[in-house]
Each structure stands twice: as C-alpha cells, then as structure tokens.
Image 1: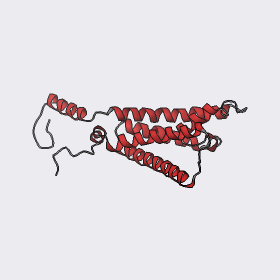
Image 2: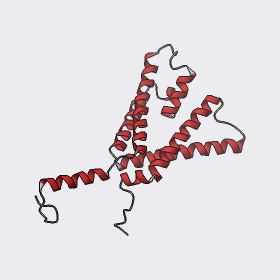
Image 3: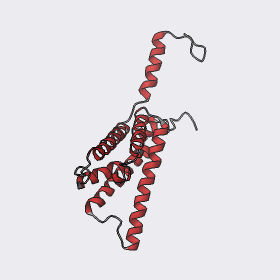
Image 4: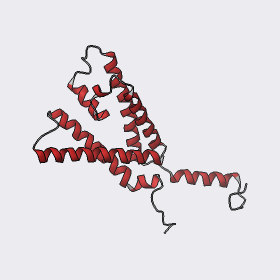
Length: 180
C-alpha cells in the first residue's frame, strides 16, 4: 500500500498511523460535559413542553419550581413557546449542537461560543441598566436566582469553549509549532 508520498507501507503501519491520528483527537472532559448538558437541555425542553400540553388544569406548569426549571433550561418563560412549534425546533437545535460538540465539529463550538457570549453579555447589560435606573427587571428572588444560574452556566460554557487549551487543541485551533 502506498501513501500520498509514494512510500510503501503494510497494513500494520497504516493501522498504526490511523490509530495515532485518532489518539490526537481526544474529546476533552469539558466538551463532554457541555455536550451532555446540551443533550439533557433539549430532552428536558421537550418534557417540559409535553407536561404543559398534557396538563390542561395548569397544576404542573403553574408551580414555581416548574417555572424556575423552565427558565433555566429554555432561557424563556415556557408560556412563550408552549402553544407553538417553536419549542421542539429549539430543542432539536440544542440537541444537534450537542451532537456536533460530541463529535468535535467546529460549527457546533462556534455556535455555542456566539450564543453563550450573547446571552451572558445581554443579561449583564440588563443588570447594569437596572442598577443605573434603580429598578429591577426580576421582581422575585427565584426569578433572580434563575437568571443568575443562566448567566453563570453560559459564562462557563463560553469560557471553556473559547479559552480552554485542551478544547482549542481538540478542535484544531492551537498552533502546534509546525507553522509560524
């Protein structure tokens, strides 16, 4: 068997070379955790949506715990999407992004970097505006805690995907010294 340089190699050498390539692309723990979080977020979105559709009395969707969980997962009030086909589309997007991360696809990393950065910046801007005006957008303690959780989760995802050296290497964004 000849490689691209015209050198002859046997099946064992080709197998070893392929194994070496695969060993170089190891999914970092941070990417595994974030991808798993995306899978569970998408699944939970669908379960929350199903709960609102199957509960005509509103007992399930009317509880404070449900509202907090919904906001943390979807980053919106579930009533915004509960009667429309938008929630399943968002869930599919979240799950597909998680799959992209799992398989170390650059597009998935780039999408999550942009989305998490925008979410974090927009909420921080809201906090600054509220502080400057002496008002508060979030009237209840559980509402504030939900948003704080969203901001912290998004900031951590952004940090790891954008700056962690292992993540950058896994997605091929680090200069290995072979190029100037």
